[in-house]
Image (cartoon, rainbow, N blue to C red):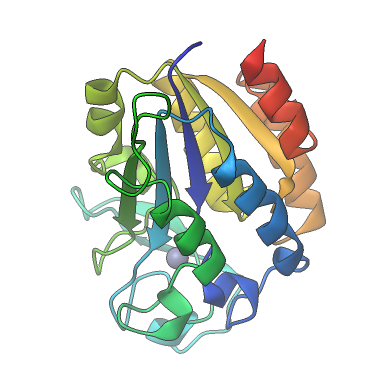
Length: 233
Ligand SMILES: [Zn+2]
């Protein structure tokens, strides 16, 4: 079987029932835990949005209302500007809202090296990838900072683990899941997206995001069982 990583994007309390709650987010916890508990993963990646206070993506930083786009100086070439969506303060480092859901953490910890490793069920590589932790940069993807001004350690880890295929779920479909799945395709990973285990901020942009992912060559499946069946083939 191809070496496959499960990437669980930003399943954090602020996106579930906090300052930037995504509608229906509670309902994806069961499908995600079901995915994590499957025996087919070589690696499990949890991404975590992890902003310092006063972050560039917070509407409060500018005294503006959230959910509008502004232009901010490009972090490397400040003479030019780049678009930045403004959000309510969310996933601030050290707050409860930034924590990954406890059931997702518990299911993942149960897979960590040493917990249940044996000859029949070798240990799974487990990593938490923090992103958005730079004050002047935002980062939607688990792989990269916005505008590709930098990268997280994820692609190197994937390379060192020999990953060929990724399965993506989490929050939110139209932002961080979309950006992560597009990057996964750019890095050449076969990419499966599990729509029952994701929710989006906005229905229109969610529909557009999923359509875009198909064009990028992602395989969209509905349920965790569909994904697990596809992997087992
Ligand atoms: Zn964020």
